[in-house]
Length: 587
Image 1 (cartoon, rainbow, N blue to C red):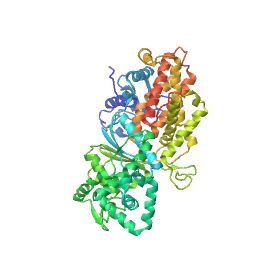
Image 2 (image 1 turned 90 degrees about the vertical axis):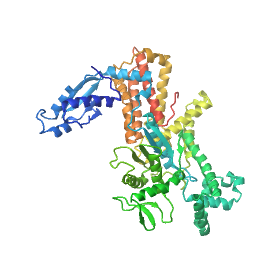
Image 3 (image 1 turned 60 degrees about the horizontal axis):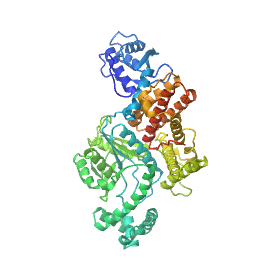
Image 4 (image 1 turned 180 degrees about the horizontal axis):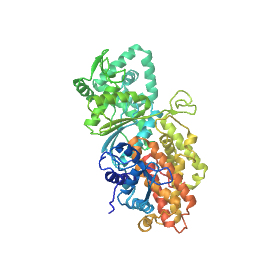
């Protein structure tokens, strides 16, 4: 009797092989099935347990004369199922599985009727915090923040799709010593600042630079600025109002970037966690973890030669104090099981130290396998064509808004060059230019393994050939155009027609579509968006091969092939959505 097993292909096969392993080696209860997609031509998936299993049971039993015999037994003991067409054993006991083509076709049809949400993976976590973007108030957002924003948003989208409740947190730097300098400068330059409001501050970056110049040059001003920090942190109303005003102006600038990127975050800045710091440090002190060292209070971390400073020698708090309080809050108040921090790799040691302290305090399990977990998602630098840190012509860091606008304008110019200015309405032209321009910037970042440095190059990212967002968005639009030109009602076809995968290229495309869920799961578990980008690019390549060799409109297989086109478009759109890219329906 066939049992209906839920989950993606790899999970379903794993459950079948698990049942077989229980029968084959009933005494080895902790053996996990090792199922992976095949690279060779012998099957679609393979189970690779035989070799490791043989080395475990050798000497205990004489029933098997080597790994191939175990492979044969695993194959023979598989429960009957409609999903497997045939199996064979190769080499040292690898069990190769060929999936039933009919079953692949049926699974695709079912997704078309019930929706792509039914292919969402199920993760073990219910609630996660993704801490990303996190620029500093009054300072310019730079390309490092752009990477954090793009990567963090995609991780959040993938987790949300996988039915995890995600708390998207913008941990802005809104409580540092820079505020003393800014507030004092504001009071001295514009005593009636509340009356004239924003004109007083004007361009916040210029205001920041002017106050920094004064801070560095004038010792008396520096001292007053340091006093201002104390008065702000002590809660004096006038200082608090000035602080709130500066934050508000800065926030509006950040929002221009978030709006263009279509990114939603909830701000809980450093100031939010400030009230929790004393209690958290007291708790750690009671556990005997906090020690005095050169006037500061520190936590010594095993294996590290520098301690984690949690209270500075002047009694002030720092990153470590705020981060510990924020982690405490996320675990105890927000009840998150997975806390993910998206920052550049340069901060790796800081996170290693502060996660060690949290494990030592018993906040996180020490083995790092059970939940709750905290993970640092590091990423490399953005480089210019000269191989150095990406900047504009001078030493000034590029303004993100200008960068994004340039991507959109270049993409718009390319569309006008292709005659779309005359064909399309202004609104269509603008929306497509935004989708392609912003999509290109995101995809160029996400397609690389995040740990590597990547070179920012407009010509490459806006190229319509190769592994770029432009190529993929155009590929999607072409599929939509094939369906439109057929004149068929695709919603009607979903109910009445049947997917058939008789041509080898149809089957390759069908199998790849079916591997979408396990790909998203892998990308989530390893927090690697490039895994999804690679899947999307290969999907597009598989579709091109199918379309070159299988006539769609006007062929005997037209209805089935139109459904295959639709299934490809649906999966592509979900990939775009997870990568934060807006799809394009016509080019």
